[in-house]
Picture 1 (tube, rainbow, N blue to C red):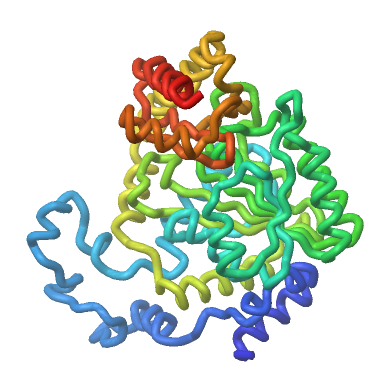
Picture 2: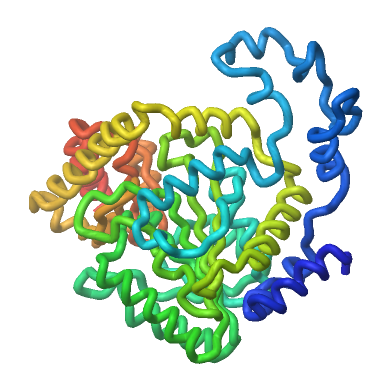
Length: 434
């Protein structure tokens, strides 16, 4: 083991030994090297004559660039576009995102958590978590309505065993009892469990009520009190898009500093929150179970996360970080976000209005939804994949089959005025097949 990794592990052993136990074999071996980047950072501070360290080309006191590129980006200083960004992300962006988290998540106020680390969007954050905390055979708790890419990230790449529980009860609420049973069974079998909470949920578009959220947190705390180490991940990709009665913040704040055997990890990003999907700018934030400032633990986890970023991609794109900074600093940011939120909310509520019209009762029911981008039909008479293909071939309409009788509809990309026509077409396609 590299001495730098051993040093980080020793800090964890002294200040939060359960977090050290949660790390995967790879996680224990991760470190951030004191190599070119460290030496370059030192040179940036002290090399006033010549700086011959970092591998970029310079010209006229700044980064070298092609005018055909800079001309399209003339509103930005070349130094904020062309050089490498720091491995953990631009410090200003990290601070602004932390402020945003606190503003939007009251339960994080007074809690101790790391500075957000910039990732190449949320999927990259999931990959970091998998590398740091999952060994082959570890259990991952997920609802049966889940984003399919979790399987690739956690199962195919890291060998996790997914333990699914029913998402909803027969009456339509989140199935807390099923979650609790699945969690307890894994806790008893493994002594370590990884829980992934994705709200608003993809594909169902559901966010738990306040009471359901409190019950989820209580179930996690209960298994921790029973001696199980819990890595509790909140996948907050669609954060903020809460349209009806539900939680209006991430469960990360409730899980942070809750119990020494709980490590809370928040994954979020500008990708969907700020409608900049192609920017690929996300964040990973850690909070251990101690109710005091535990700087050695946060430093160790940050260095290990930086180590895997350095190993896999070196650093995240600089231009998109600059663009997000400019957005967060804009006086029009909140107003413009609210305008887009209202459009999204209108589409969601129109979808529910159309579905509740009574026109389609013979063809489908629908799963509860109150947030996010999606909702799912529960088909009664036809299979989802057959319907999907028929919709494409005959009507030129695209949808996603997520289970044998579940069809996901992204109302996020359908104008409100077109939603009635969309469901009329789907209904006609069902009649064709039935």
